[in-house]
Length: 118
Image (tube, rainbow, N blue to C red; front, top):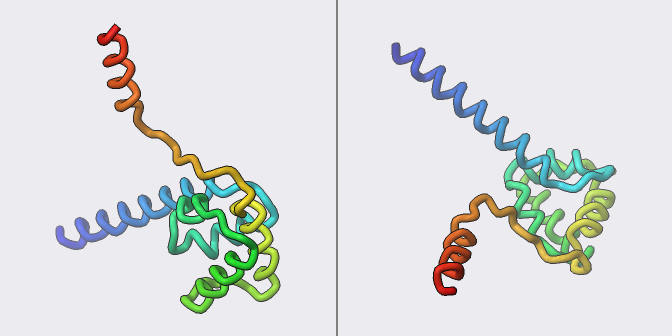
């Protein structure tokens, strides 16, 4: 009985992790290095950590180098193209990050208050 329960928990954890990683990859923009960013960066971070950044190429270089020292797997041939991908998509010239809205609760309350006040 305990073995079955343990296997069920492990299966659930693996399924949840897989589903989360699939969702996270959808958030990164298409490009030649999307797959590398997914495997190198989203192994430890959710996509939002990257999506909200607005760093210069020099800052992305420092960030990638730091992450490699901490264990991120980035092949030497992919180092510069990965930095180019990150700085092109998440550089200071890009518009600010707009987090997805999952609830309209506040907007609905505000709209109903406005209608009531009129």
